[in-house]
Length: 353
Image (cartoon, rainbow, N blue to C red; front, side):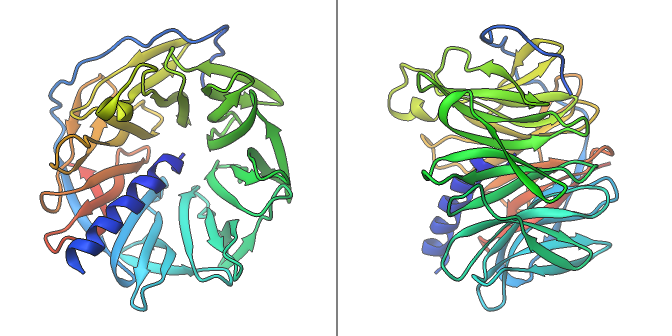
């Protein structure tokens, strides 16, 4: 659910360091989504800084329905560690032998998933449960990451296979299963519903990137809307994701993405303020959260929320700068990051008022 964000945040942190020293199946290829214009939402949100583990930067990636937030933070020593925050206390979840870790998702039982590094620098999908961390291994390759977990404890993510290509996996009952691809070399699972439907992105036999849903061994190709690139980023009844950039894109247009919602066999596209926009999560009421930016202008990045009625608004920020919303629970509480007045990124929670 969070793979697209990793490259964006890495770039943001590099810049900061320099400056501061379950849906019904569709059949056939997907149609181009209908566009929905930005409108003004009436909901008001408060924003709260969740702090750090003693270092400069932090980012919240997910929140469960009991209010537990997970993500990553720099520590006082400068390491990056996964954290869990609940009832006002941020807890360091630790890391494998390599010393680096990030938490990406959490279910209502408090089981956290993400990844951590070994001494060799290899990445491993990790589960944190009842105070212990467990490496989930790989599909035979060097690296793996866990990206989602459902309420039944079933975990999804990606792992390199022996060839070095990434394949989506489902981890259940101690076994990591390769679910394959849409015919191409690679696939990545982003999220999983409580019914076991997996969503993500895969290459096809002809090389395009398509969004997909998968359940019980069967792929549902959600296509690319004619852009050559598609990815399903989250599922909670409805599926959300992106198409793009368009195949004839040049220059700044190469960053153009079209957010979509897929429900009951119908794609609905919508626009936010900036032309690079990614929906990261959706709750059971169909409220979608994400982030957008525009590399053509040096005017920051915004966290946004799309309400169930289609209204879209920018979420408040700690200071003028960089923001993105990554997770939302059934109560409409949202988590992500916002740039503070000191220029560092902070994990934040937005609550509807």
